[in-house]
Amino acid sequence: MLHLTVGLVEGLVVDTARMRANMDVTHGLLYSSSVLLELVSSGLSREGRVRARAGRRDGTWDTKTSFRDS
Image (cartoon, rainbow, N blue to C red):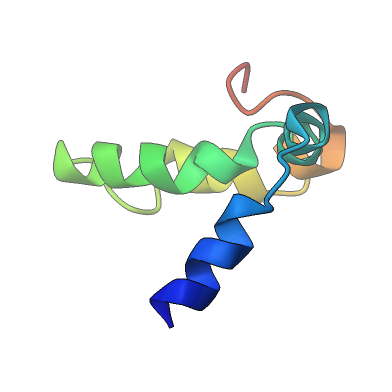
């Protein structure tokens, strides 16, 4: 299994521009779970601003605005 994995990784080509484009298509929402976990660990409610801002009708996904700017 290790031999197969090494063969796979050795031939791997990373297209950084494509990776960035894939990450940018979410407008930062891929980071919302990390932010939520940090806020919950600091004592805030899970139903707080992060969850509401990320998913609500006028949130990041619908408005295509940056999650960071929300």
